[in-house]
Length: 262
Ligand code: G3P
Ligand code: CA
Image (cartoon, rainbow, N blue to C red; front, side, top):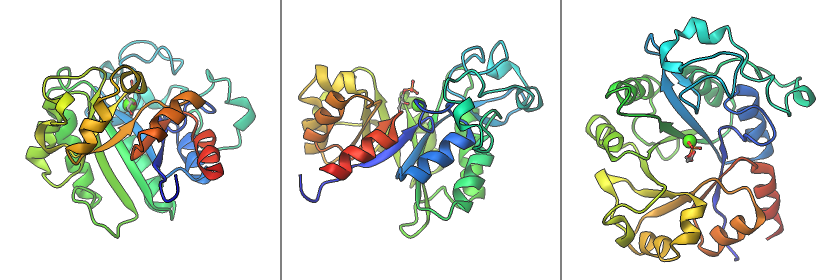
């Protein structure tokens, strides 16, 4: 596979070894050499974008209830790290228990001194209306990240399972790259057509296995493919055979080590 090397993205910061969506996890993934970070964003009750995957707090914090029913101050008082088995061993990393806001993540990647590709997934466009995408574009614009600049250290791509969210992003920031995430194959996508100017398809690895013609069709149509969540050796071999452009993984060190041996 000479000359081929996909981008490696730390899914939720690298959720296998450390508590997901914590700043410590994201910084560790960059230290390990990940090319980029994957982050889910949701809105708090008072309109802040926070990096949390689930709609509820119960699995990843000592809080209860919906993220969208809490204020930023209420969320900031919770512990988002101690539940994870990797927490005690890596307690020296900064902010392994604190809620991460998108603002803090952007500040951290800006000051990391690294080239970082940030994949931001907007969650639940129907629950939050257009507000998630509106606030996201406003924040990216404030940071000078709403239009890709080839020489910039931080490159942002927005991802969603919902074509509706991609349409909103395109309407507000037409140059911002987008990924259409796939759990199944909607009409047209099997022939390589992506909605609303998305350049990249983001199928789950189970879908790649179930539909062997999907990635060839995506590639033949001139699109890129980022595949999630690639954690196991057999899955990694599969996506590398397809020469995917990006591997989204909870285990960035495992993927990077494997690529280094290729
Ligand atoms: O990177 C895409 C992947 O994160 C989608 O699944 O549920 O982990 O957000 P999920
Ligand atoms: Ca995600």
